[in-house]
Image (cartoon, rainbow, N blue to C red; front, side, top):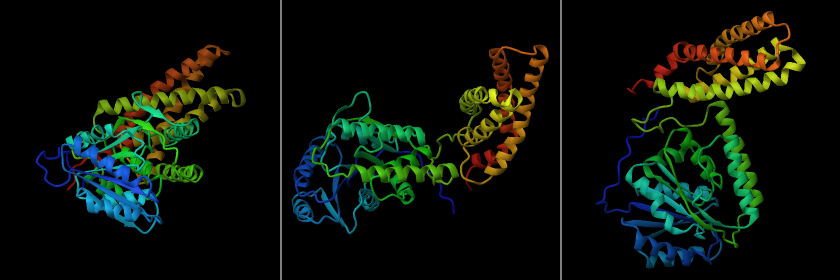
Length: 408
């Protein structure tokens, strides 16, 4: 049974008597930092947060005095709760704590409080107001002030650059331990996230972004904890495995996003103007790729063969990109049929560009390379316009109508 879409975002009532915000603090053997950090967080929320709140200490199977300290704090601070897990894993702790909470807005902070708490209210305000679905602190925004060693700085920037280049994500900082999510969104997202460790954050954000949910970013001031016990090597390897897994799911069209779109939010397939803009963007990238491939292949294969091979490769990529980005179709259903129909459309483009090339060579036996490329680009643009019309009217017509039809 397919899940219904998420309802419209609504603001949290100003007269909410139960906790509006539940801030989870995942811990493992944090007997040194737990008490001062929780007291500091509690004091900050008591002084600055205008709604009822709760702090949840999620203990990841600590073996030191962390459980005893947490129990003592719970007895003293009425806004504090504590849960203990039998297994380690930050993702597991967040999944469990957020799944049990009934607060409309859920957040988490690292126990070392490396992120300045002044950013906490700006983090959750867009979720309380109904503007956004998730919010993340980012150390890479222009307004952020970050103090950390060159090694951790390089690792962080390389990781986020890798995400942008491999998974094409739009969010800027996946691993900052300062995030929030609306509970109605978390209830749909959490069952879909497979990772129980440090990659949990990234997977959650990738699924949310691919589903079209709104992710709000807040610049933060951040000071590195010199006593951090995070194993950078094992964490990096786990993250690379997670990126590879998500990449495979994206390539296969199996990333689970069904039922996550908001009611009333425009789907990627809606609107001729939006489709034209996205198709033009995909076409521009395809044209650049086509020219580069043609120029690279031309010396070895000759003009006609280089044109055919470059156009074929770009046509396959173009069909896949337009299927997902322009017409909003995901999953495997119909993918092979769409590619087959796309190849038929490709033959029309091939006829247009090959015909233009043949006419050029008839007019001038040895045309200048720039002239040849210019004629092919013009012909390819004409073929692109024809391809859009055929995609919209034929290739993706049935699936697009099904996707845009109201649920019954």
